Image (tube, rainbow over the protein chains, first blue to last red):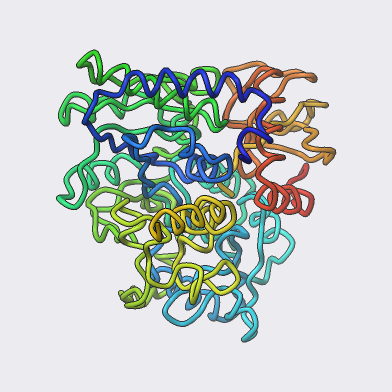
Length: 375
Length: 92
């Protein structure tokens, strides 16, 4: 098994797995959602599910910022990129995300000036180097990434750069978790909370999950043992009839988050009344836009945005995958029409997307599933 | 872009207090430390970096564990380091 070969603490993992099994009540099935795409990656890469008892199912959540961008927003960004004197910039992960009229890569091939950057600060640098151009940063990401965009806008203001703007698509994790909790499609017993997002927002915002919904949440690190440890903590809570917010990743995540990062977001951005999420539909107060105070850095005020809605291709079931209703391999086009090279849906594009993670690392388990079904 | 990458601070830039030179997997790049302002950082300290910004200070053990993990995930980490290599964050 890959997990044993690759992870040096296999004995610890096995011991932990035995304790997890012992905590499961006979006849009860457990469904835990890992919210963050980074955890999905760990789970598939290291075959965590092979270590868990059959009673425990891990369900993949919406925590991949690339995956939740609706096709209409990609089209809007490509529309901006096609305006005169525009240089569009974004993270590498965005380049192959398909919109209704193709991806950034397709638009680039048609002549648009679209550049991949590592950091929004690189986009700002491009603006400084090209004063006659209008440089737009396609900002995506949860609260992990939003402070970086906000700090870059503040830097642009401090440096007097007026040819830089942000096409803001930042989303917030709490409303998405709430939407999933309110969805009738899925009954979950607990959550494995996101790691890096919590570095910024801390653990307090999750308290409603325990208080209002009566479900445990354990914020977890990204190593295989972290994920197993968090599953153990969740099962311990359930066995003791407790539901609380616990922080398994305290070595990196402070309980109160990063106040400076939160202050930067609050200074530059404000909540939108509503925002469309791929797969989850419109969720109120679930995304950020540049606030009026920083209007000159807001691409949505500088450019005419078509703002059209584009339905996902009918063959694509990313929505169900993002809500955890379908496992990646249950999608009709998984691994056939939709692959990382020619993705139809966003979950296959980003390496944190459940489908891409499963495609890259899950073949072994999948073949086993097939064999089991045949027998 | 979603990865948090550990880096070791090698130099604090006196004329730009919001930037530090950081070594990340053999790449030496300027990283914004403006989100850490309330914590003091010095050469030898480890930080968790996300899209060019230090999000938090971490200890060396955590940094090594995180690097082991990132190296194990392959392509996504290689892409991130390649992007970092191209990064132009710098003084001025």
